[in-house]
Length: 65
Image 1 (cartoon, helix red, strand yellow):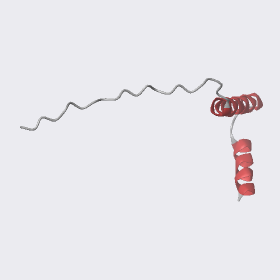
Image 2: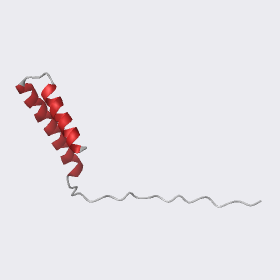
Image 3: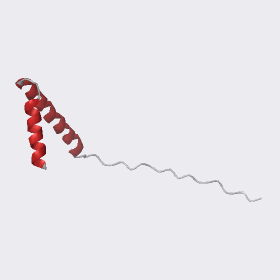
Image 4: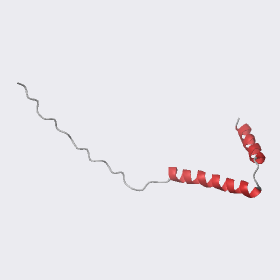
């Protein structure tokens, strides 16, 4: 299954009507997009997590008449 998709991708890459320079530029843009996305998703976060201060709401006493 995986080889079929790889072969389909290779055929698509050969069949697109771009010049060699345009194909190279398209490949570079694709690699940069995937690399930047991976960096933004997988980068370590060194700052401490700030826990929010939870304010407690006290209900007024019930009046029984």
